Length: 260
Image (cartoon, rainbow, N blue to C red; front, side):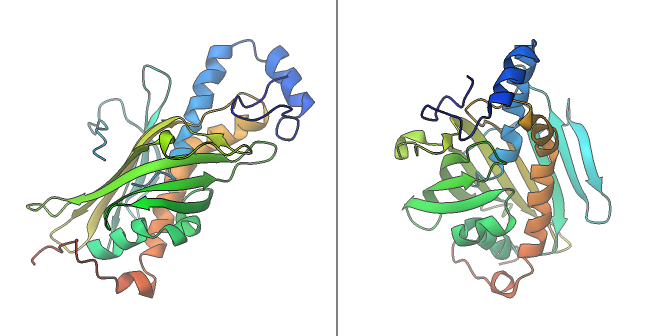
């Protein structure tokens, strides 16, 4: 009987017998499902907000998946040799850097705008711009929720004023929860680049592995949509969150606005 490796046996709570039969007898191309399992990380990696992630940003091999001309919001996917696609979402938002940074750093509001986020729990802080956070991702039944341990850091370039919030997996910070599946690896990065017209170019990119066994038929539709829906949903919700009064008025002493 197939089950998420990090889940205790028996796994019937999360994997039905019908799923197991189809996963073993109806899907002979195991390598194809391994690639799809990893592709689902695109949806889950959107929960990982937070040092120095070096993700390729050239336009070569990036494939445009979704576009909204009115808001200048776009999502690209990029194949990778190991079968884990990378994602990149971009948009333009009329907001201050402090307002956008305040949304990204507010763990209590994460479930309001990040794709499938159930909860974000701060584990440790090293000042206001560096820390470790536990992020729990809500998964569709009968799958177990995913959890990510995110080591994150926010920095700002003194010359360009570009703000970067980068995150990486830090599984050693907390033992896995027995009823969730730990995401073993990921990288993600937010970049906020101020424009001369007062708006901000926002970029969100990443790649990751959701962990566990996601090859069952229940996940086929989820994987196909999460690959692009996760960055699309998150970026659009960020546009809405930053307009809330508490974020419009946010002042962060470690963020410098252009012209100051």
